[in-house]
Image (cartoon, rainbow, N blue to C red):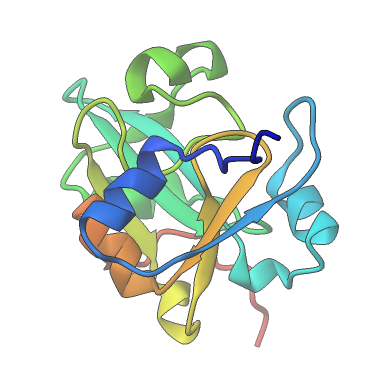
Length: 165
């Protein structure tokens, strides 16, 4: 009788190699769904689930930003955080060629190349956050500091400010 062996992604192998603890979640999904739908499927609060976005700067370098699923990336703040005049989102069709991951399965850990990575400051408020595990249907939960360690990233204020006081 064959055992159901958990399929590990590159991101999970890197976390294990670096001895970074994480919890793996799976969900049924045949195609891309957005982060809010994933949070709903897993009954998780939106502020705990983060999405990974890939941009290109004026310098033609790529940059990775990790923000809460219900928030929007502030392109001006993002550019400033990486020392660029401006950044723009990469086209969905280019994500795999740039990162090695597909849309809906992109994570800051274990991309084809090491890109400058920024995690939104809001993650500091969370004990743990949940990001893509490296493929559709897979999420990983870990401490924000551990995500930064594994992706060689830094915290930055990179989301739109929509709060009215």
